[in-house]
Amino acid sequence: MGSAEPRSADYLNIYSSLLNIKVATADILTAEEEYVCQLISSRLRRVSLVYFPEPLLQLYTPSDDLRLFFVSNIVRIICNQRDSRFSINDIIDDFCRESYGQVHEKIQLQLQQAVFAALGLVTFLYAASTDGYHPENFTAENAGREYLPRQCSSALADRRLFALLTKLDVLPSIGSAHSNSILEGSEELLHAWSVSYDFLSQICDINIVWTDSLNLHLHINPDSRQLFLFRFPSYCVVNLYGKASGSIFHRVLDEYNGQVPGRAHRNQEQSNSQAFLLEVIQSYRVIFCDAQSRKKFASTLRGLLESEEKVDNILVQLCEQSTVPSDSPVFSQIQDRDAYNVLHNFPILRNRLLTLKRYGMSYDPMKVRQIIRDRRHPLERLNMRVVVVFGVFSLLLGFLQVVVGTVQLVYAVRHD
Image (cartoon, rainbow, N blue to C red; front, side):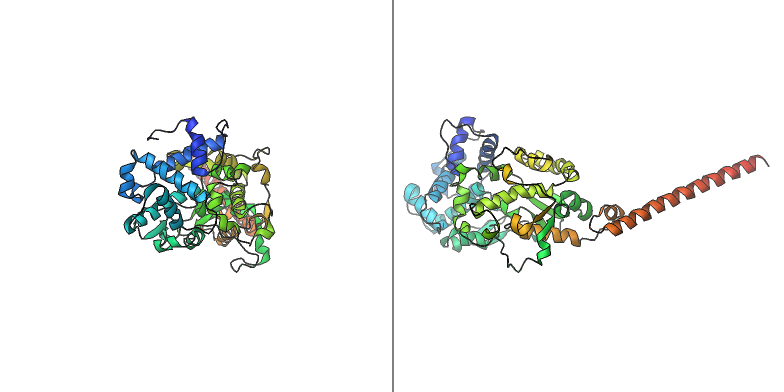
């Protein structure tokens, strides 16, 4: 493929081979589908060659051809698996049987890392980390304390993929009505303003960090006061189309879709992976629920404007517009509300939303400006405003008294 940006005609191939979303040659991709193709192409070129064994590097030049060949074959092999309980080593065995031949232990370890990186690339669930890279560990980027990466032994390559991704904590957890991490039933009511960007930024000094990884969406780092949001909702949208039911994203999450908790509280026809993507899309409308939050959205994009990928148009629609197109098959499934029952509206993301709510509600504002704008305690807010108004009035009155006294003094001196 070379290092040049692929032509529009190439996008159909990328769309079908790397996402496994089947399209006819004559099909015309929608704007978000073409954007995702550009996105995948850009991400593909940035996959580190450190993951690939030397024999593969010698076979494919330029390096972009190797990346495309390898990732497209891994996607095809995964989507052709008859059983959802496959492992990374199962994938490698099929790949070597078809394209490579027998491998020794060192090359096996490298191929494990290459498959792990490829899965993160096409599913957006995580980003394989090259910091402190070691072939005997699977490492995914993290946003936790001190940004320590998530890591587990590559010995887990023999275990089913679902167990590996669960061990790395890169799958969205499916909440249970009896989960110990959820507090009293009254906590299930989430007022949108309590997690809005305007409230979090004004009262808690929270800043938004746009992330490439779905598993970090709505993660809050209290140490750095950063809220992580997924920056590519177009990827969620294209995987919610009817023709995307067999996509690589849903195929990788096949066993995840078999998990029961949470299903009783939502549309029974949706798989867990579909429900997760829809909740991600809905969550932008919660974080940017009011006019003040939407006005601040543009200021969060400064870092994105300098990145290689264009700003996602779906992201702009969800975060900056007061309404979203109701004729969209995806947007028609979301509803803007002043309050949500997170058990029913966000059975998968509920823990993260409630964590965000609890963080905001427990934060003690330190500045007068924050206290005045604090919506949690209306009586204290009113009292503070009265105090401020009275204080300003007293200062003005005192200033006027000084001015009058000065004028009187000057007048008296001049007429003595």
